[in-house]
Amino acid sequence: MDIDTLDLNLLRIFDALIRTRNVTSAGEAVGLSQPAVSYALAKLRTITGDELFVRSRGGMEPTPRAIHMGVPVRQVLDMIRREVFQTDHFIPSEAERVFTLSLSDIGEMVFLPRLLRRLQTEAPHVTIKSVSLSPADLQEAMASGDVDLAAGYFPDIIKANFYQQHLFAHTFACLVREGHPTIRKRMTMKQFMDATHIVIRAEGRSQEIFERHLEEKRITRRVGLVIPHFMSVPHLLQATDMVATVPRSLAEALVSFGTVCMFDLPFETPKFDLKQYWHARFHRDPANQWLRQLVYESFIQGI
Image (cartoon, rainbow, N blue to C red; front, side, top):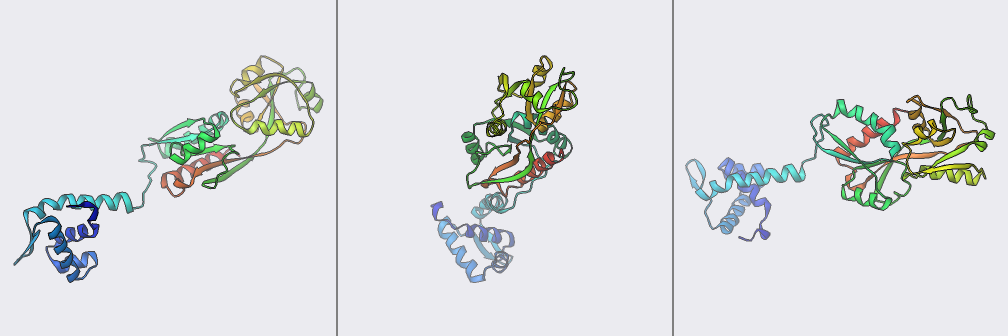
């Protein structure tokens, strides 16, 4: 038998016949007339080289070949209904899967704890994996499904097959160590200009906004240290009288540790939008939809 020429509707009719043992009832089950069912049975007989069903007083009795075919045919049809046509349902409390997120180190420090607190109660068996990729690699990973969601400042994700959702507008703040000798109640423009600054050039793009803003305003600083990571900022500030300008949410998080103080900048600060991004392939995926809502709620709860 050449399976490439097999009409799957024949399997539906065969399954109805094996269940009802009656041509009329089988037709009603699949929405066909009695002649149409009889025609389909004739085709099945030709394909299999077997009578399959024989008329008797009790109805259409299956042959041994038909009985042997009954279970696998039902399994094939059930699998098609379940895996191909049935709408997926995602139950967070029962889910056991890994979601991969692209977050900056700020996202991991500030927003990931909020997300994990929600997961503990709503989806205790879900695992979160955080990755950091280049813009080109990130877009490919999202298209392939290797990354489920990107959340943060990703201005390079601009292709038409990506969706995005605004989370909130963000800005910057300054950090100094507790007990700083000159900066106490507020930061003046003179103090900002006189201070030695730590500049963070991290993988995230948000710091570029601040540096570009300073160039546009023709504000120059004395830069004493350039580093690639935000996480070392509190320790460096604690040991020096330097100043560091960071995204405000990170500043608020670091202040909670009790070793640094936060100040507003003495001039108008630029804003940037934090968003979450996902690929169009997964726009209607129930699991991705649930994750997006959870991330959205976790981000905005800190505003």
